[in-house]
Image (cartoon, rainbow, N blue to C red; front, side):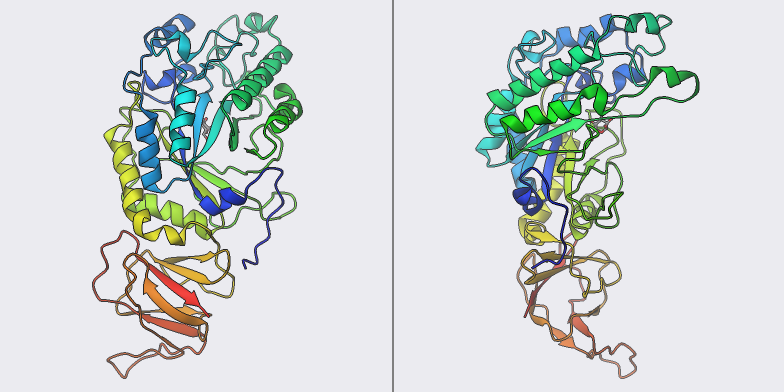
Length: 437
Ligand code: GLC
C-alpha cells in the first residue's frame, strides 16, 4: 500500500484520487466576444454593450453529448461545468434571476443537458460556481469589477448589499444541489485581496463577504459527500494550484501535511473560448502534465472553452484526441496510481507512478534511452516488466548491466537494468509497467 498519508477531507475524495483526470468546461456569454472570460472587466465593457451578448446568445450547435463522448475517450472521468462565471450569467434555469440562459435565444437549461450527457457516459458531474458576480445589483464594485474606473463607482456602491448577494448565492447553490441529482464536485471561485495604491479603496473579497461558512454548510447539508475546493477562503477538500506545474506533492502551507490537490490548467492561454489566442500546448506537454501531476500524487483537470455556437473547436478536439490516443493504452499508469515510494529513484528524464496497492511501478520515458536504463532501488524487487502500450516484455537484469562492450562503469548492486529496443515505440511517452514481487 502507498505510504503517503493525506489530510482527511470532509467530502468523498476516494473516487476522485483514483480517477485522477477531469475536464473543466468554461462556457458563457464571454464565449461570444471570444477573447477571454474576463473580457468584460478587462475592457470595462458597458452594461448595454454586454447585454448584446445576452440578446444574441444562441448556442444552436450545443451538444454536450459530443463533449461527453470526447471526454470519455480522453480518459477524463469527471467534469466541472461553469454554471455561472464572473459575468453573472447563469447557465441554469434559476428562479432568482432573469439573467439566465433560458431567457436568451438558447431557450434551454444548458446545465441540465450537461448533467444528463456526462452522467450517461458514467462521468462524475461537477459544478463551477463563481463567487464573483459582475452583473448582480448587490455585488459591490471592487478591485476586479468592470465598473471600477467609473467616476461614480463609489456612488454606485451605495445601497449595494453584499448580505443580500450572499443570500442569492446560497439560494442558487440550493437550486443547483437540489434540482440536478447527485453532484460530485462544487468548484467555487475565488477570493482575492484588495488592490494597491489608489485602488486600495476598492477592496477585495473573502470568506466574510461570501459568508462562506453558511454557503458551504448549505452545500454539504444537501450533498454531504460533495467535494469542495478551497477558493471560498475556507479549507475544504481540494487545494487548487492553477496554471503552473507543482513539482512535488502539495502540502498544507501551515502544517506541512500532504493534501488532496488538483492542478487546473488550460489547453491554451484562456479558460473561455479565445479565437485569436495561439499558445496551445504541444501534445508532449499535454501528456507530461498529466503524468507529472499523478507522479506527485495529484489530479489534473484540463479545460475546454466551447465556441458561442456550442461546439468544441478543432484545436480542443485535437488536444482531447492526444489524450485519447495515449490513455487508450496507458491509463493503467494513471488511474489508481500515485507518487512512487521513496525507495525507487526516478531515472533521468523519467517520471514514476505507482499503483495505490504498491504492486505495480510505472516508468514513463520522457527522453528515450539508448539500449538500457538503470533504476536504482529496484534490484531484487522486480518479478516481470513490459511495455504498457503493447504488453511486450522488457527484459532486465539486477546489479549488473549486460553490454556489447567490456568497457563499462554502470554496475550497481541496488539497481535494475532494463533493456529497450533501439527504436522508440510509437507512443508520445512510452511506459514500462513493472510488476513488483
Ligand atoms: C481563475 C480565473 C477564472 C477561471 C479560474 C479557473 O480564477 O480568473 O476565470 O475560471 O481560474 O480555475
